[in-house]
Length: 563
Image (cartoon, rainbow, N blue to C red; front, side, top):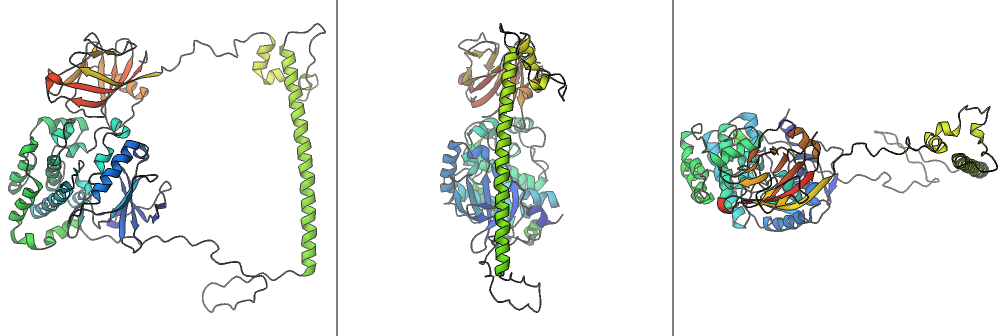
């Protein structure tokens, strides 16, 4: 598959052809925030149009934050950022447009050619660090810096999507999907749901550059919870990185945000190692080898030509001569003669008369059918009532002997037959039929060292420790515990359903669940001994001070719901 095919995908049936007047030429990709398309300015300069996902667009808090972050992002003017050109936080859906960067993402480049050589990694780190300087200068923290958000242009890297993750954080969408960010490239304080600062982006810069040097994430692959646990509780293994780069990576990946290098220090460190090449103005040849050949950008999409761009040719217009080359032109239709016009009027009158006659017949047929149907309903009601003193009600024609159908209206309508003999057992649904348990919602349920939860109670939050579900911080990172309750954390999705909880709890046997990697939006299914099932969605987690630690989240309970 060619590089151009990798970058530019054709529009699909569910893609809009136009966004706020920008005609879309191709699809560039999709992510957690929305889809990205190629478009052009009026002058033909390529743009990247990001259209926000409906789940986020429906949240008014997101729109407010999105507008605020877009306003701040307009001020960012870095040499290594993709400039924001246009946006509308109040659009349906919200969208933004940045200059299109002609080049692959770091993810695509590493996937295609493998780990980058040391000089290219130095150029990468210097360019991304300079971009972070410009972003942080406007009070923005990227929060989701990763290889797919770094594009490799011929003259250096470009950082995209800065500030947009903050707009989505805390919405109803992320409250069920988890903290905004990509697990393999989060900082420890971000993974544990603590404070986010500019130093958080520096940690992500170190992980992104390590991916470029190793060809894989520094903290390994696997389930997100395992990766986050390693980030929070273990030191990064720098032994596989090039020896000359380890001191810089150690500074960027320090567990304490205060001990990390600043973006300015990263730029200075890289310039010193690059030496004379730092003033080359576009990077050495090795950088251009990494970016690969530039893909041909599709041409702008122009407005479609109307089906009839010119008024119809008059019927008495002179015939134009045929062109010498090309397709023959259609000849204009000659004007009808008086005899033809009279014949056309006679045909029109005949058609109109036939239509009136047919309409009248249709009305009569409908009226007849309606009267017949009403008679049948009356017959059924009479047959189903208690016989009067004058004798049984007469049968309808449909049930008379010799009827062509051979079936009575009661045979065609079992419910009417049941009414006739006074029995309703076959027509009334049984009250003993099993019904699906209904969810009960309890918003912002509090858990700390002094209270507990009970799924069997009408008010699950108890102001004492008598509930079976308790929160404690005796272990590192704190945990949920239950003597008779089992727990399982849901990963890879949001909006967990009762059936999904049932499935995961079927084989669950853990009576405690560590919360070291749990952040805002984490979903935990739980089941007690009575078969009640609960879904706890963490909204706030504070474990920095174990004596004052607490959880706050939304609880949904299904009574007697275990299979």
